[in-house]
Image (cartoon, rainbow, N blue to C red; front, side):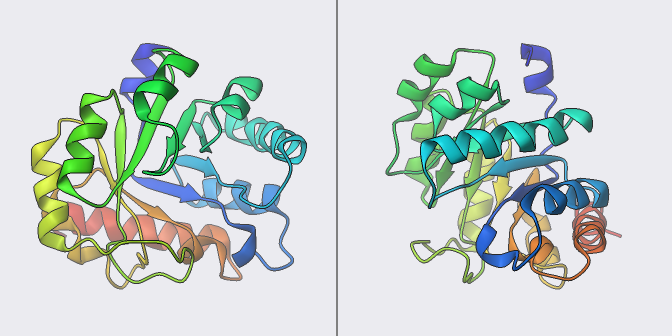
Length: 217
C-alpha cells in the first residue's frame, strides 16, 4: 500500500470480524457479502486460533479484499500483517505500543489504535497512529472488556486529533444518528452487520443511516 493510498483510506463503514456472531455462515462468504453491502475496510480479528490458522485465514480474506480493492487490517498481529502483506494492523491499549508496531511494519502501512480516553488518543497520535477506534460508544455484547465513551468524549477526541476517528461499540442503524454531531470519519460494526440473515442488506442500511446522519438528511 503506497503512502497516497494510506492517506485516502475510506473508514466510513469499518467491518470487524467475529466468528462468534456468524453462526453457521462461512467467514469468507460473510466478508464478501459485507463488502458488497458497502463496507469500506475490513479488520480480521481472530482471538481463538493458532498462528498458522490465523495466517491461512488472513490469506483467504485478503484475496477477497484485494478483489474489491478494500484495505485489510489485522487485529493485534504485526507478524500476520507482514506475512500476508495486509494494509495494516489495529492494536489495543494492552498490545504492543504504536511506536513499536510502526517500526515493525514500516511507514507505508496503516496503524490503528483503540482509545477510550483523551490521553490515549493523544498518545496514539504522537506515536504515529493513522486512525483511532474509539469506544464503546454504546453497550455491546461483542466484547466484555470495553470501556464506555460518551458522545461528549467522542467529540473531544475528534476535535483534538488530526487523524480519522472511527466509533465502535453497539452501533446500529437506529442509534448511529446520535454520533453524527461528533464529526467522526466512520463507524465500526460487528454484530450489526454479521449477525443477521442478510449481511449485505444490513451493511447497506447501516452505511446509509450513517451517511444520512452525517450529511444532516
